[in-house]
Length: 221
Length: 247
Image (tube, rainbow over all chains, first blue to last red; front, top):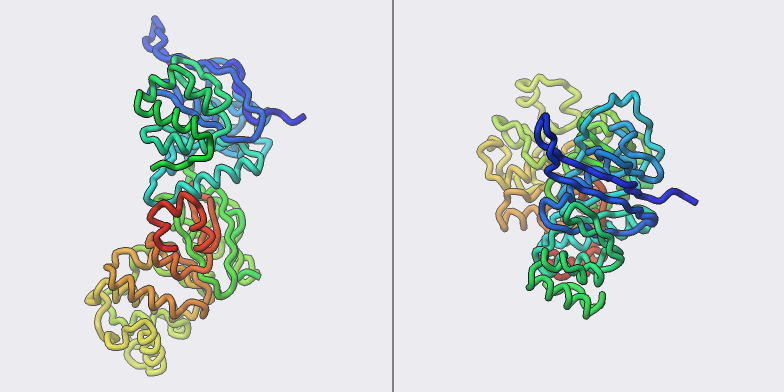
């Protein structure tokens, strides 16, 4: 059997302050495996560690402990220039390619794949007016069909953002309180009390409306 | 066979990847539109097509011939002409001289502009033909810098056409034009349609949706959607947006 597309194996990231007495200021832990191609929605409050999670997944920020395996390869042990052949991080419209180069590339391994298996879209700019949303969503679906894993991070600030998430994502990761909770569908994400308090009452009502309608009633702009 | 074809074009500048992997095949006589948000990599893709930027990976074929990595003038000589998002004309020269300088046989004589521009009737006749084709017949002697913005756009196309290209690449031809300027340019490009292969980057959706045979949407350095204007407008999100108006 082929290796799972993305595995975060007891990954732990700690940011600490102080030179002598190191005091942790931020901790993020994740232990999960995304075996199949698909589209995963990532949500969570600001500062919860979504970007750190993405950076660890794409090899630009090494975890304090644990391993990130993309298609069975530890991405943090792959040559910097070839990490984008495993995972790509798009921030809004641009690709992020800044690596903390801690080990000379010569000591690192080549990428086993040519085309990236994991595509992370960090808050892509969706604009209702220009119509590109439709093309972007179709592109995510095409990547999924081609056997890739799409990770889509969004900050839902309008009801139609939730529509997009409900329409496109097959499962969800909720990042909060130093951990990553996996939710198998939109309904169980909305049932999560911490997600509801992050959304606020008005957006929670909109999310519940989407759950009631099912996937049929898309797009209430 | 495609007139111009890009396969797996990848461009990176240091750590920055501008084009991930772009494939595009444009048939002879096709008008192919390219659209996408700012920073999507559209202009870089044009720079690869016209030889200004060498792709890190991938290939460009022109009429089946591999032209990847050839210099700008080699590719131009093989029949690819382009206009620029920011116009590039010889401001101090007349409209007619600008077009003349685009003529391949004029260029073959070398750059003795003072003599060349003065005398040769044959070149002048060809230049005035070219100017007439873009509606500038009456402004042949006006210096490029004294022309209106719309006229300069038209002149730039005349210069590109003077090279008798097989492929014309237009980089945002309507940018900066007012609505009547856009109308005039649309009519001009509509007359060219079918006579040569055209690839146009454009933000003006009305322009693109009314003229293009097919459109490629570039985002994140790759083609995220492609189809006829009609096909693209079937997308539910497109229909509900401003793009849907041009169906």
